[in-house]
Length: 258
Image (cartoon, rainbow, N blue to C red; front, side):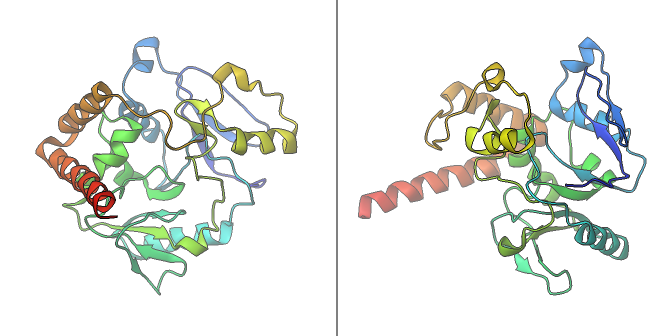
């Protein structure tokens, strides 16, 4: 899918080491104490090993299903060099109030106050910007949900792929990728196992339900999540609490009048 990749790969494995012939792979090799630190601290640690102006961010459950569009990736890097206000090009569409940008074919400008301006979608980032918008206390979910507020007071520009032009890094993200809540998504990973004849035992991690209504979060989880958001961004966390409440009330009202 990217056979001639000559980029240095920073693999955030925490404790494990890995190598592959022809690839420049660097692993973190954290101490047991460091391995217990929050995700945000570990991401920042990984970014400290990046010695280039730009970094491609890929999460472990994004399994490529087509060759990387290297031409488009190179074009994004060139545009970021030309326009210093651009922090990121996401290769997936980020729903919200976005503005099509004819200058950057296939991309649109993400709204200044949109949800999920920080996003785990495959992307090309300015390394220092990703570092700036990531806090040491962050979890991956809180980073997206609450951490986006860190971008609201910035003039930086965030771009995402238009919905019909997600052709740079293609993967099945309908359920979040190949892993959902720590377990394999069978409809995503099974075809990959068969295609590449991978000796992978799905039972070790388990298989997730693919019903989006299953596995609702407990009240305690929600309270802990909000408290983490407050620790991350202070009173700005109430912006997102307000938005969630408005959405819930709107849904109930629509059911009531239906």
